[in-house]
Length: 427
Ligand code: SF4
Image (cartoon, rainbow, N blue to C red):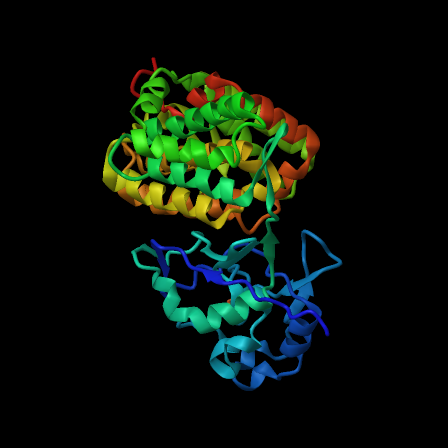
């Protein structure tokens, strides 16, 4: 008898909701919507100029600039998709329904990760339609999301063996137990920077625990995380409070990081991009000069950027960031590339980038402090350029990058430098 295929249960996020606001931003972004052969066939099977005469004679499907052998949708001179109507609805959706759209558009903003426990449904934060909520609000779309998750345009898979660090593997259940501890630490209530460093200390402690209990304790991560849950995280937070900031190193590292990605987007030569990144790194550390940022469409003066304050104890600023970071952990996109420990380090880098962009947005506005309005935009920028929708995460498949990140993950100084803002003490 043929083996019966068991479908995995769908797991919905508990605290994240999404509803399209019809702002049109997602269809005006610089993304090159990837098209599969059947998407192209569907789009070409209709004479769209019957309902939108200006499309007459236009090539609706064109080669992607980033990979000319692949196809994407034509954009107008203002960057909007040719199918975006003046009232921000999609012509394809309006005329033929959701399932006629390219698969990538049908799936956006959902992301799927298959795991031994089920298919985790996550959401991209590169859209203004995200809201915090509770009680699995996306379950109202269960039928549609189940259908999408069965044949997604794109998904990731995690097997039962998960890398903790290059020397240790743990089961997926253990990874979930460690995540539960990190999520506890990221609950609102304390200072966000302290909480993120405490997460690093927590994983560091687990690494020691693993070495000490090797072969003695079954499922060590479960015993470890249950232990901390019972006694509380006070001691971990105390250790974390000793990690000091290094504002100059932080400015120079993050500016270099941002400039390398900007260079990749601007399509210049990698040599030109690297030398601009190097010059920007020096300018940022000395607080002189400015740099043009494509992602912000503005020039950023380094002196103004370095003086913008970020209050990591202000919940109006940090609650949206906590929601995002908790969701990145939930949707498990970090584990396949980096494993739990380096994935967490990357999460801390995402936080530092959100803060960097929020400070940049405030500096461009002429404000001395990051305001709540700077945060949503910065989360969208980081999600769009550094986390999803790019090939950025594939960089971390590279063995050399993994080894560098692993070395950094073992340096207490690095975590303090990246996470702790030093703007208030910065001379
Ligand atoms: S096809 Fe429709 S949903 Fe996809 S980018 Fe164009 S307007 Fe947006």
